[in-house]
Image (cartoon, rainbow, N blue to C red):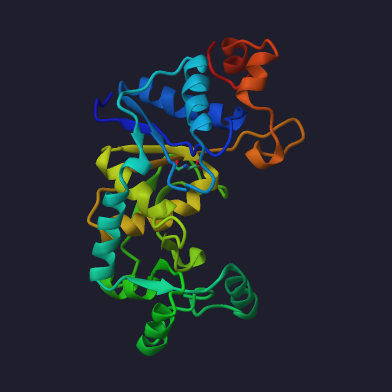
Length: 285
Ligand code: GLU
């Protein structure tokens, strides 16, 4: 198979890994192995409010315990903030980004009162220059958002934008997928507090690491729509996407950090071996 197959596992060190992460990492790792390709690890730690060094250290330990190997050096997003800023500057220079001063509460109120569209709701689109100047003068914090309306005008619509899905989205979407970024609204490109945001960092890094196949959970299927759009706006290559079903527990619920799912370290401490867990998750021991 193609040696050009490059995939990645991109956890955020905001907690300890659980079975869902193990499943996702093994899926990507085995996809690379089956294709004779490369497997990379990327630490997505731009959210300084939630990321912790001990969680990053635990990611390396837990994945090594599972039997995974990855290339060095590992890309850590916090080491590359200037690159995300450069991408944002480009979008700003192209008139595709605007400052959003709305607070969380204002955004949720706007979302409730906006029936259907305009598509920028609840972000509201760019402010009139005078209003914006005043808020800047007052030192009000702001996020940068992508203007979907400006992006649509720039690209002459989104109709010609597609990505290839070789797994499936949550509703079984597969094959050539037409991009529809509207449901996500004017996504945040740079957060008020951390100066960058998830989608922008991911597309910059997928390009930098020459990722040919993004293998990840179907919960990120909708993210692929906006990420494909950002690739078009920034002239970046588009990988093939392969979203996998989310692992569910015995209660039928997906594993998630916030549900206090048993962590890989707890599983390990309870005496379960990596082979046991791999087998349980449907991989060869
Ligand atoms: N860092 C993201 C997460 O922890 C995953 C990003 C991706 O795979 O594109 O959910």
